[in-house]
Image 1 (cartoon, rainbow over the protein chains, first blue to last red):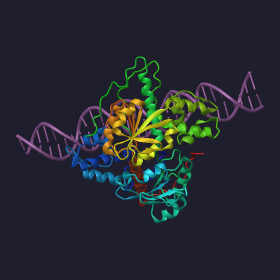
Image 2: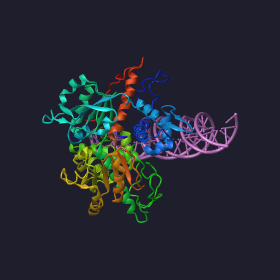
Image 3: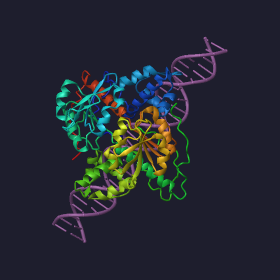
Image 4: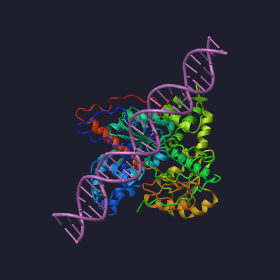
Length: 250
Length: 250
DNA sequence: CGCGATTTGTGCACGCCTTCACAAGCGCCT
DNA sequence: AGGCGCTTGTGAAGGCGTGCACAAATCGCG
């Protein structure tokens, strides 16, 4: 996992709280719920009414036992002998993830990557709406990108007062990211998605997730390196030996 | 983790192999090595000659004990009482990650996101070179993006014969991703970075890592939902109570 | 109405990862 | 040369996550 901390120590409400909203789902489960949701939407559009754990697990690319355990954490929404009601499960997962309420997102840094993020379809289709773009470069301020006008970063506090922005996306160079994060936190943002290759320091109540495209490639590079060194071994069986396909997908 | 499988079952060379190239590093460690590497480069540019585990851990945003254990897996490259030699450690990590050899990358799908990826600085600065762009849209073929000409996806096999391409990046819509993956595998690609929101089915010797930007936002949304429900509790202490800063960064 | 087929929900064991705590080793200062 | 402080490397413990295997539950059919 590449994000840093998630409020582990401060358990807060100890136990037997009236309505804790959610019985502390495992972080690993939370990370998989969006994948289940996407698979469910696909199945629903395909006309499926119910789906078995086996089928849904295949569509999501996970083990069926893992899926059942994940879903059991948010209650019993399946029917034994039948499976899960697709529509009901979609509704439940969306509620748990808080997707039933539209969340405003602001994006800071409209360079190469930020430009693409501003027009990314996947955000809007999942209920996220980018409501403001910011950049520190004066030459970019005023530019219209995918229907939104780029504001100067200094206008962030003002824009934040007009609309509650809970999530901020940082797509600036690494050198500017910490300052931007500070401004976002100051403006009331409590969740940050950071594309800049650096560590952010934020208050404990702010969640940060980091996406570093270069890191992903470096991890793949390691596996390439490993595979190459295996095939180069004197008596090593070639890495292409077990060429069995995965049985996922439809 | 969002990637699927990494050759867990087929252990291959059982044990006591002559030179296994690497004593099977834990996957979690591998995922952190690039972060350490970035921190080391920063420290090196700052003029640091040696760095303690505490300092490096802070720069990388992790626990110092975790960092020491991670580094211990690739040998003893530190000096007790002093710390780690920055230049030596950089060299070691780059070797382990296979970054000492330049790896050719091809990118399929030059839409919104692919366009940005083609020009992303972070790739080249880490030894990755995008050598070819592909797209299925005839109107995009021939277009020049960041110094590279877009080829039609059907030309992939031919281009792959001219230069060995180990890593492929998929930035197409979900519907086209599986077909593209099949073509990449057919062309000899053994590592895929998938930005399309779907599950890919590939042979066991091919590594797939998935990056889904919408999923990251949904995970943040969950935490927003959780935080909101906590503050709304009758007797719940406000979530902004423990506002201590993290002591990371410089 | 009962029975078998099917599928969920879950107790349990195993393995990976994290964290603590400390011995071992190194350099510096006197 | 000897001692002292600092830092690494690691053994051990605990927690988390995964996967197996099976009991419980539901539907359909005779």
